[in-house]
Image (cartoon, rainbow, N blue to C red; front, side, top):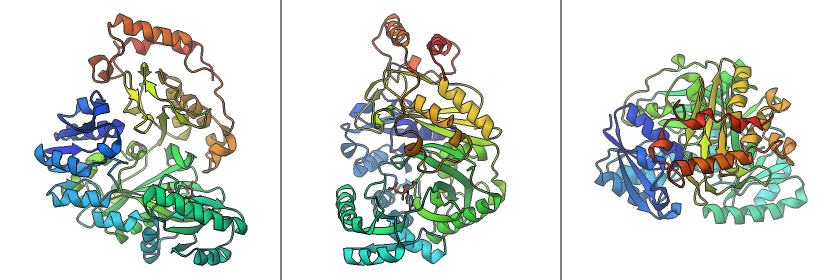
Amino acid sequence: MFEKVLIANRGEIAVRLIRACQEMGIRTVAVYSEADAQALHTALADEAVLIGPPAPGQSYLRGNTIIQAAVERGCQAIHPGYGFLSENADFAAAVRKAGLVFIGPTPEAMRAMGSKTAARAAMRTAGVPMVPGYQESTADADLLAAADSLGFPLLVKAAAGGGGKGMRIVARPQDLADALQSARREAQNAFGDDRIYLEKYLAEPRHVEFQVMGDQHGNVVHLFERECSVQRRHQKIIEETPSPVLTPALRAAMGAAAVQAARAVNYTNAGTIEFLVDRERNFYFLEMNTRLQVEHPITEAVTGIDLVKAQLLVAAGEPLPFSQAQITQRGHAIECRIYAEDPANHFLPSIGKVLRAVEPVGPGVRVDAGISTGAEVMLHYDPMMAKLIVWGQNRADALGKMAWALEHYIVLGVTTNIPFLLAVIQHPVFQAGEATTHFVEEHFADWQPAYDPVPDEALIAAALSDLLEGQAVVGASSPSAAAPTGDPFNPWRQADHFRLGRSR
Ligand code: ADP
C-alpha cells in the first residue's frame, strides 16, 4: 500500500479523501491555492503545498505543478477527486510518466469514454442499449437529413459535452439549423471542440446511474444504482438509492449492462455508468463518468463499502476486496447537496463569509462539509458547501430523517438552498417516488421560501458570539471551527432558539 498520497483537490472531497487515507495509515499531502491557506483540507493533511493564485487555471488545474509537488514530497500516488483534473486523460498519463500512480482509471479507458460519441461507439459494439441517435458529423447537411428519420423532439449534444453545455432541445424541424449552429458555437467555446451529434429526446426520463468498480486482475463489479432525477439546469441536487423506479429484474439487467460497459473498455478503479429510463422502463446508456462521483456516499451507506478505500486498494494493485455476490443493498439513503445559492433567484451563488454553520448530528446522518463556520464562499469555486447524507431502514424512514436533518442545518451569513431542498423532499411527487428530470422546472419554477430561514436574532447572536470569543470570525482551521459539530460543548448545538421562528 502507498505510504504517502497527494490529494489534487479542495473542499469537501479533499477532506473526505484525506480522512480515508488517515484511516488506512497513509500520509497525505494537500495542495492549496492562495485563497485556501485557511481551508479545512489544507489544515487536515500532514503536509500542504501552495500551488498558485485562487483561479483554478493557475492552481488546481496546473497538472505539472501538482505532479512536481507529489514527486518532491515523496508521494507514490495522486488522487484527483472529482472535477478539476479528475477526467483529464493527459494528466493521468503524465502522472504515470512521472512514475506515480493515478488513483483512477487508465488514460486509455478515460479516452475511450471521454468523448460521448466515442463512448457510444464502444457501447454499441458491446451491445449496451443506447438512446437512439445519429453519430457526430462535421457536415450540418448530414445531421439535418438524419433528423427526419430520428423524429422530433430531439436533442443536439456536444461530443465533448459536460455540465449541460452545447445541449439543445429541438421541437420542430424548422428550428434545427439554428440549434446546430448555436450548439457548435457553445461547444467550441466550452471545450475547444465543435463536434456535435443527435439523440432522440426522451419524454420525462429518470436519470439512474450504476456505480462500477474494476481491479487490475480482471474483476469488475457494480455496486447498484443511484437515482439522480432531481436536477436543476441538468445538474443533480438530490440523489437516492435504491431508485424508486427499478424493479428487481430491471436492476439486474441494468447492473449487468453496466458491468459489460466497464469491461468493454477494460475499466479499472471507480466509475459510473449513467442511464436514462423512460416511462415504459426501457433503459439507455447516457455516458460514463470516469471518476468518483459527488454522490458516492449514498452507495457507501447502503452497501457498507468505503469506495475511496477500495479505490486506494485497487490503485495499489490489490484485487477488489469484495465479489459481486457479497455486495448487497441494505436500507435507503438520500443525499442533498447544500449550496450557497438563492433558489428564489435563478440559483445564483451567494458569495461571502459563513458566520455560522451548525450541521445536524444524529444516527444515520452524515455531513461531508467543505465550507463551514468561518469559511468563505468564493466566486472562484463551486458554491457547494456540503453534502448531507441520511440512511434509513426504508425510504419513508430516510425521508423523515432528511426532513429533520434539513430543519436542523443552520447556516448564517450566506443564502442557502436548504429551505428549497426541504420543500422538494416534502413535495407529494417526490414523496411518491415519481420525480423525473423535469420535476424541478415543472413544480418549482416560481418557488419562494415559506419562511425566513435566518431570523435577525440569529445573526445578532452570531455577531455577539464572535465578539465574546474575542475574534471577528473563527477561521476554518481554528480549533473551535474544526471541532466536530457533535461536540456537546459546542454552544451552537443548543441553539434551539434559532428554530423557534421556523415552521414547515
Ligand atoms: P452532460 O454531460 O452535459 O451533463 P448528459 O448527457 O449527462 O449531459 O445529460 C445530462 C442530463 O440531460 C440528463 O441527466 C437528463 O436530465 C438530460 N438528458 C440528456 N440526454 C437526454 C435525452 N436523450 N432525452 C432526455 N433528456 C436527456
